[in-house]
Amino acid sequence: MLTFTPYSAKKKFKNLYISNEIVDDELKDVNKVLVRIPNTEMPITDLLLCFDGQNLFDENTSHFGSIFNLENLIQSAEVKQKSNVLVIATTSNRQRKIQYNPYPRDHSETSIQHLKEIHKTYIPEVVNNFNLEITHTKKHVLGASMGGLMAIKFSIINPEFKNVICLSPAFWYGFPGVLEDIKNIQKSTFLHLYTGKKEGHIFGDKVNKIFPTNWNLDFSTNDNFYLSGVNLIEKTLTKHNLSHEFFTEEEGMHNETYWRKELTRYLQKNL
Image (cartoon, rainbow, N blue to C red; front, side, top):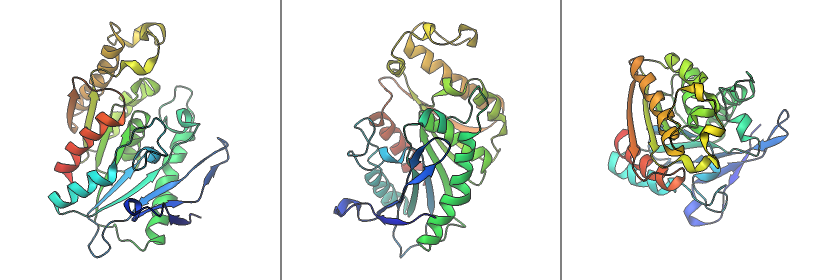
């Protein structure tokens, strides 16, 4: 059972709560749940479910030193859109490459079980603990990199989350499974897809030494490889007549600095 305590005594975190550790017996590691409570005097208009919660609010917990600065982004969007946003976020851990890959080529079910637990247990316990009403909220799911794969899969198995924010999805971890699964996205779902054009730096070596060339992607540079993989996701969405929009950034790199800009674009229009 989840229990929650205030995230911090700092004023800027006054509406943020964190759960006890949730032990994953299979992975021998833990996750936590972060909750951003909106204005309790207003109906909740939007629920934003997020992955990699440690990178959302607090630089001190970020895995790589940069954050979305999500509280500021949401506050700005709430004023503009007259919305009231609840955030539920799960943190990732040292086993992220297993827990955050719903399309592994070895057919592991670990990630799918994590997604099911979020929907079946974590969200209801947050709602009950804080006495919230989310029946008629607009539901969004956000993920970046491997979290982008999780966001797509979460919406497929929980189609009431009709709004997917997929930033720089780490397609190669789930290739080609993610392409095969896209046809299972509901026709009523809207997917916001983004990637930067300078994200190849994350691979650490030339991609033609790492990945099979029969994937028929652009191996000319690491940056082009990344872009071509996300382009293929977009083409697959188009092929199946799925509602989406696709944005790129010429200078975009694989980090929260650029994802923050893109999330601002989404929130200012879609809350």
